[in-house]
Image (cartoon, rainbow, N blue to C red; front, side, top):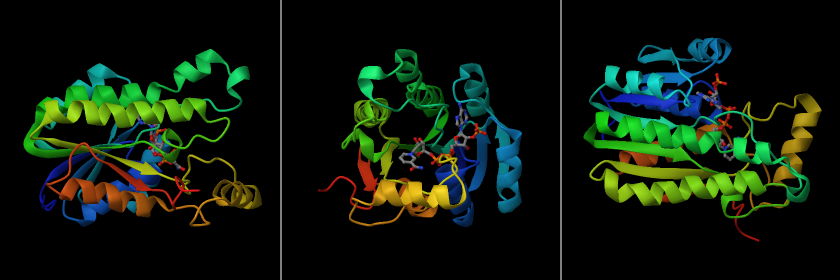
Length: 238
Ligand SMILES: NC(=O)c1ccc[n+]([C@@H]2O[C@H](COP(=O)([O-])OP(=O)(O)OC[C@H]3O[C@@H](n4cnc5c(N)ncnc54)[C@H](OP(=O)(O)O)[C@@H]3O)[C@@H](O)[C@H]2O)c1
């Protein structure tokens, strides 16, 4: 797909991987509508975005809001959902709060809702990209909820790809990426990212741009659907 002149909706498009995707799509000539919940994220993103990017307040768990957004942009070509959905639970499974585990599925429901409500408004030549994460296929202790949700996202993409065709849908699975998802600052942040990537083949955190470029690749490549693309510094390998 030539992205020039196409309309793209990027949910979670105001921070981290979603924001990098918003900026790369705009640089490719797409008109981008980037959405998330908070005004603060939107203001920060707006300071980086140029013409061609507009912002909208949307919670991916608000089905009525999603339906209205997609109807307003009927005929759009690109849907990216990189929203985390809200808080996720981590920690030892046998001591894990079950409501926290269940709540981690907000990410999945945000993805499912946006695809269910968005696909019917997309051009048949359009494409969708979602984001899972390396714990889906290599869960370290403490990552049971993250892993289960990631697996669900990847399974969802494979399950719905045949029903969405000729529209395409793919998922990108990041490793440890240096984004605002990690709240620590300064030396504590560097130590956290160093520790999390110490056993990976590429011994550093990835950048949001490195993941966004894979998202854009899946959108452009008309021969890809139902695929999972790993951008994870070799996280899955021993
Ligand atoms: N960073 C990593 O190491 C990593 C690794 C593997 C997978 N991932 C996945 O990559 C995706 C992007 O993560 P990131 O690192 O870029 O995170 P991030 O920097 O925290 O950005 C998350 C974005 O999602 C939005 N968002 C969260 N909940 C939302 C909701 N209910 N409705 C609408 N927007 C919502 C946030 O904006 P508001 O708060 O304003 O709503 C923000 O724009 C996520 O699916 C994450 O699980 C990240």
